[in-house]
Length: 395
Image (cartoon, rainbow, N blue to C red; front, side):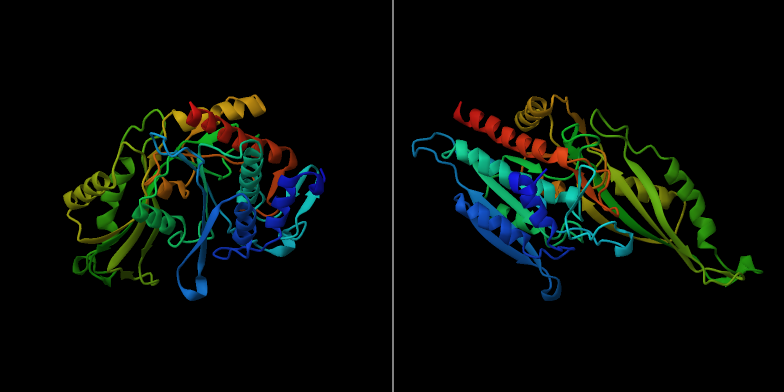
């Protein structure tokens, strides 16, 4: 497939050639904004974060062409994604330079090929094709991009969402271009994600000589029964869209390094991945009740990384399902599996959020790739969603 004959592939290659390792954007957003401005989008750059690690965010919006006598405001569809990519890893292990797009065996290789520069290019070309046939849509179209998704995610989409909320900006539908598919583009979409909440538990005891345990208080011994109970807890039963909430220990640190010293404290890092059947408050309360029942002397610090969100079948899910079916013949699977995404921030200001992108088998790996056969269908699915929402706006 020649990139000169395929505009979506050509733009994907242009984006892949930019080394935008998080939190750098490297000019990706400028390239995209230039193309959107020609289409009538008002493009705004919102920077955030420390000077040395400045995050670039792009908010671009094209207002619908509606008569002044319209009874209801135009709906807004947002395409959202990130221009930053994860580090390449050892360059010697790549079969081709990670920021020099390469074709082999029907695949396009490069860091960000599947996560998620192909989706970004597909967004832009889908919008261009849609507006070429519908120059005066009854739908507001917007694009929200950040260079802080693969990093801490504190100066990216969350900042833009806070800004939009403060302005009173209303979002109705959002498609996040995360790589959600498994075998073929469109075989799976995410209509929700679990929440994530971490805790750092410090159980306190008394340090002493290991030969005189009666003169010390071993916090590891004290913590073990409580931890065993926490492992066995059934936090909830999940629901039709989410598996049950899980609790996992990720790290445990205790001891001085000497074999003859009882430690004075033990630190346990843990994480909840929770569904919509539980809240952060209920999980915190239940966990602390167990610790208290075991009589532990402890400190506990919580970090909520994101709340769960769920978009039930309705206007957006139906439009995406129809678009995938018409383009590929696939009946897409709704899923809430996987880690977190920026959808958790968007769901706080947008009632309908789904994630749809190419297959994710190679994301974050050496020799990341996207199959050439997946690129055009993805762009066409995005365009078909625009067409369906336009039809509804006109009804």
